[in-house]
Structure formats: structure tokens, C-alpha cells
Image (cartoon, rainbow, N blue to C red; front, side, top):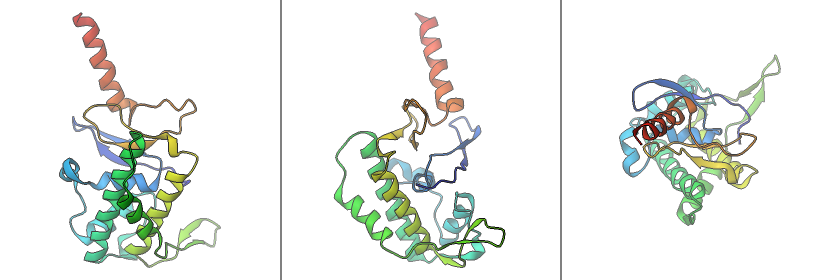
Length: 198
């Protein structure tokens, strides 16, 4: 799992922007869309869309330093969809599909991004890089997450109208919401209105 904690700006159902950090690189990819009902959130339509999204992700890759082919964009969709299926299955304690695990392993088997140190001893990536290398890094992050110490802390947001998945790194391990400011607050308001109505 990536040690760097950043987050991406996303928008609530009401249109309010907020910072959401799912806790790992592989779960950040889920914010780009997904299978089934999640297709309406799709943002990776063209190869350059993947490059632009990677600049926002915790990898902070500059689009000019990254090459993305149409085939690599399709591979990104396949990896993302497999991650969605596996993350939901884990969060719900449901059986895992072998094809999702196989897709993640297929991506992880490719050569990943190459880490290096800069002159001032800060981490960086050897660039330019290919999208295949990036997808391998994301898949390897997934291997670390789903087989590591936080594997039992992968959660779906408790709001019935929210699809976000995150790693619960809270000390108590009882985090329910993607964000207290959005879904958590809406739940409290609903509960208060329900109490007042009775």
C-alpha cells in the first residue's frame, strides 16, 4: 500500500467539493468510473484522460512524461473494473471472483514504475514511463492492500447512495463514512429529522 497520503477533490451529490483519500493508490483508480451503474461516473474516455488523471493521483505524474495507447486505456478499464469487483467483495465479505484476481495479477506481472532518488534525496519516478508501468504499480499496490494488514479494513461508505470504497485506518477500526463532512453529516441530519418526526 502506498505510504503517501494525498487525496482527490470529488463532489458530493449536492455539488459540494471535498477532499477524499481512499487510503491507497489502487482505490484511487476507482474514482475514475467503473462497471454497471458506475459507468455514469466515467472520466477515462481517451488515452490523454488517463494521463491527466495520473497527474492528480498520488503518483503525481506529469502527462508529458507518460505515454498512453488506446490498448493501455482498455487495460486500465479492465484493471479498474476488477479492482471494483474485488474491493466490493472484500468489503461485503462476499466470495472473490477468480477472474478479478487474475486481471490484477496480469497487470502486476508487467514491469512497474521505477523509483529513484533526486539530488536532494526525495523520491521520484524514472521518466518517461508507459501506462503499462503505471498500471503495474497500481496492481502491485492492490496486491499489497488485499493481502496485507489492512485487508480486513476495506470498507464501503455506509450511505445508501454512495459507492465510495476506502481503507479504514482509524485507531478503532469503526469508520463508516467516506467523509464525515458529507455522507456522515447527511446521515446525522436524517437521523435527527427522524427523531423529531416521531
